[in-house]
Length: 244
Length: 244
Image (cartoon, rainbow over all chains, first blue to last red; front, top):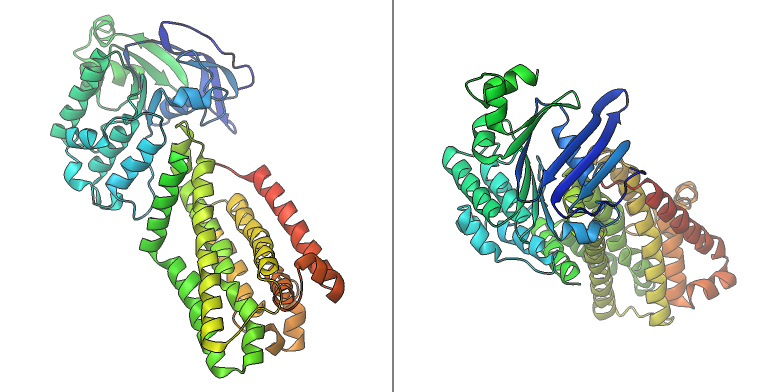
């Protein structure tokens, strides 16, 4: 991303312009433009392979984009890495942990990476994981691992959260717990960019959404507007019509 | 520093839980020293000391470091560190420090066994011997970093480690004294970096420092070869290393 320039904008959490990425001959992102104002919960939707995770990874600098500009909290994710990630929390689709690592140790490591961090025991309690503190991460269920990944992304009290398929594998009660927590974070002014395949989740949480198809944004707006525009019953209908 | 200390302590705990390094890096060389001491005379035991003391270097440098890094990359643990203010390099430093600790504890215990049980003593300067050991460590670890950087996946890293570790263990003079090997096997073993390392260590143990001894005894080519190996390997590792 050689043409990335620092854009100091006061009101936007994320700005992406003309983002392009290809894997060999496969075009994953074909000129993505996105703006997420501060304090907003933004949903990035699309079928598997539509480019959601690649957008997030290019925005974070963990994948090198072929072109375009990215500004996260007014900073360049590659050049201002240290300062930026002190203020940004990330939960990837797949979160790996060292073998034989205990839940408490994973949180202890995460807390040690930041100058200031919140009490991770409170976070574990909030996500019903405190009793698993001494368990090996490998012993957790898929849903519990996902909740741990979200808790770790929150450990330093970030201003902006990236959550890639945050509730995949979670039972309904756990999903509701996570949703309520994210709503509370939004009230505190935290911005959130998430991807999800659950349209009920997106409708409940997101202020605005963008639908990706083959690396391009084909629709963008509030869930209510998109549903009304398409004269559809719900967002899932819109998604099935537009994302294919 | 907080992050390094936490990571070092956690990585040490993980290594102790796994037990591989305790078994192959510490207990095995101590056992071999005891065995050689029991079945050999004082001169042969003293001659074998430098080789047996290097078993910990083989285990940590040719197995521990490359397999850990390849595994952490495969599990996307290094990627997770990339979205924090702390570089994943700190995790790698902490892991290397743990492996170094095992190698030096192994050296200390092998020496104690050789000294207390069989009366082996260093004829040369202890300081020079330790400096030579550190030099050999830097050189042997460069092979581990090279494997970690070039192996495309964990399976390939496993194969490369096996190819590097077992012939080194049996033919370079660590477990079976080099002097007992048939001439053709010795000629083959002379191509192994550890064979040269053990020659330097033997020289340091019986006379002077690595550089000084080299001039006197013709081990200078080995000294230079290990220096070149380390230089090239670290450069290639840096060039080809991937976080993911």
